[in-house]
Length: 426
Image (cartoon, rainbow, N blue to C red):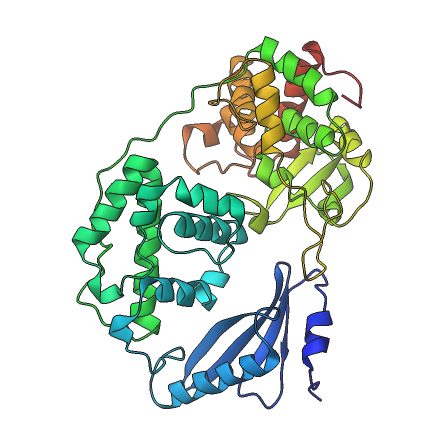
């Protein structure tokens, strides 16, 4: 028998390690989904062989009664042959702000990777639409960006946005930031308009953001740390408090993306893994696809030094690197990447803004190539894909060689030990 959910019971429902959806009876298709990033109302319906689904929003932003009313409206629209989210508003006069709000509330957007959604919202609210979470700091930043503020399209109706207007926006963002940022935002705007044309009854002759922009050359990152600078970093990392010290040391020992390291969960670590063709036993971090930039599940090798860094941290939640913070839904949060601390450290040892913690990754690759470590082995250790048939793929044919990854880690660690990385507390 289906449970009769109350609003209080819905808000109390906690994430249990796997996304779960619960039907709310007698509401015309309304349900709520308990996910890692929160609890959300959703609506579903099937009619004439076609499935409809709409993401309504967080249970903390919508009351149960409001969600029920939304579900009823969606159902009525579908019965009339209209898109679920169609309303009596003159769709030709829909503002870009309204179009943006509709899109980020959609199922398509909320099914995207969380890190991408955060970046999408940050870019759009900085350059194109208005932000709902206004703070004094953001207000000051907004005042300092007068030209960009003038460039926002929030109050402009979709029917009034021409290709000329879209190109002007792209050009201003390109001048204020970079061609790559402007290109990304143009792509975001195009997606928003396309979605509203398909799902929200907006009728336009063409998408104004469907224009081509000049191709930009990929900027090569040529900066890397010298051995002397790595030695200084080792010393500076040693002086940091926990958990920053362990976080920096793991980034140093592995070269993995610091955003991926920050998402490491304790239950993803597998101990006692036998290394093929050897007598060694190691630990493996089974990183899920949603935690990686590659969108692929990856088995990262954890050496004894890395494991000792992890084991030295207190268990404050599901994440390895954590201050024990939780979100409004009571879910554990990972440690925020310490970008400001990194900047202070780099300034202290005399390095410019062109250097970042990510520079460790480039440094590691550069040094390992100088040590004649096969490129395919380096790529696999870093969690990168090696294309079938490529030169690097033929160097080592196994798709996921633990032994090869371990050799990469040991070679790099040996170099770090020579530069001063010694004790487990470094």
